[in-house]
Amino acid sequence: MSRTLRALATTLAATTAAVVAATLGLAHPAGAAGYSAPLRTAVASLPVATEIRTGYNRDLFPHWIDADGDGCNTRYEVLIAEAVTAPTVSGTCTLTGGRWYSYFDNAYWTQPSDVDIDHLVPLAEAWDSGARTWATSRRQAFANDLGDARALAAVTDNVNQAKGDQDPATWMPPYTSARCRYVNEWVATKIRWRLTVDTAEKNALTSYANSCSNVTISVTYAF
Image (tube, rainbow, N blue to C red; front, side, top):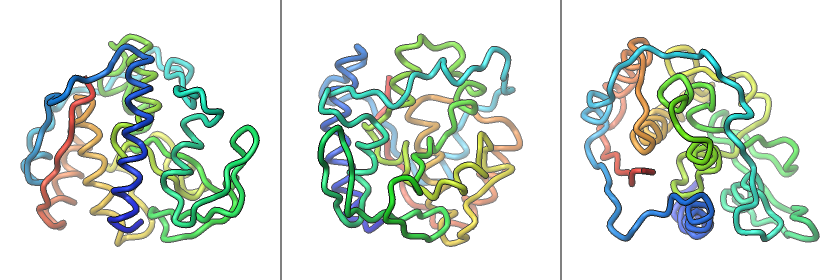
């Protein structure tokens, strides 16, 4: 997606995110705390902790909610925001005529059914990395995060399914030119939600970051 389209997606997402945050009691005041640092510094700052999967259940992250009551749940809000050709929206959020770009595999799609909405940091990975201690309302906010366009991505369905709940130590986008973007977005999401990384994950992120441009990572903390 072009920078212009990503900026538009962020603007559109932010509007819905405000409703999501208010609904969940997680609204952020003006000037909410943020973080900004070069990529390699950001990776180095990620706290390391052992991951714990005990007790995980996907249902503990209520997702694809319709926070603003417009008939389009989070999945469809992302599809609308990330479309490279805007779809027509009709009825109970039926999308027609749209076109989507999956940056994971450099592919284009015209049917919403061919596109999954990927949690950049998978729900199980979030649980392992700290979300197991959160209230359900916070996990719901994570699973429906429209406040940062990097948190959710419209991607080819079978590529998303191949990723599953893996972190960058064991899975990266098959399109090699997308990997630096993926690392940037993974790190930004981990920082935004104050999640930890395990040793293998940090080693992988460090290695990839050292071969990527040392761009600035800027985020607003989710809480």
